[in-house]
Each structure stands twice: as structure tokens, then as C-alpha cells.
Image (tube, rainbow, N blue to C red):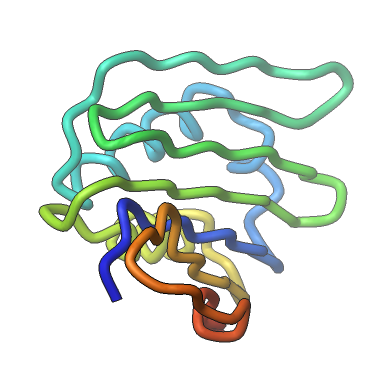
Amino acid sequence: MNELGRHILAEIYGCNEEVLDNEEKIEKAMVNSAIKAGAQIREVAFHKFCPQGVSGVVIISESHITIHTWPEFGYAAVDVFTCGHKINPWNACNYLTEFLQAKNMIATEVKRGIFNEPVSVKELAREYVR
């Protein structure tokens, strides 16, 4: 299958609540996740919510990595979207899962931009449970 990009949608549970609520730590981890994947970082934007939670995006040459945290639930939603075949989005996703000290992670990989032949949704998505 020849796709333009890979998009991982990760549900990360049982995370360290203090880390999830720390904008500085989350931003640093997100930048490091992009580096671990082999991506080229272009821009970084993060926001700390009151009373809790952090959202942010790392824009990479290959697309983006985003996070939204809910410290009160020990939960983070992470998207890793990469274009091309030179970097591995799973490296970023797995790094973040470890950094957040998660108890478990459920992720789906979706192939983006398939032009050569029609495919079913089942062929486009692959689920990974850790």
C-alpha cells in the first residue's frame, strides 16, 4: 500500500497526574518525542489550562504531534501524524507513553492519502494495545 502519511491516534491511560499537569515537562517530552521519531521541528505551542490540563502541538516538517491531557483522569490523547517514510511515528508515541509513566496505551494507526487503489477502512487502520 502506498500512502502519503501515517497517523497514530493514541489513548494513554494511568499516567502520572503531576506530569500531565506540568506544561514545561509536557512540552519538553513532546519535543523529545519528535526528535526520537527523527522529525524536523518547525514550531512549538503549548497552553496550561486552569484548573488543570495541558494542550500542545509540535509542528514538524513531516506534519505534527499533538497532546491533550486530563490529569484528573490520568489520561492523555496523543496524535502523531507523519508524512513520508523516513521517520517512525511509533517512536514518538512509545516515548511519550513511557515518559508519562502510563499503565496502558491503546493506539490506532491510520494510513493517510492513499491514491493508487480503493481500500477498506479495516485495511487503513491497525490497532495496537500495550
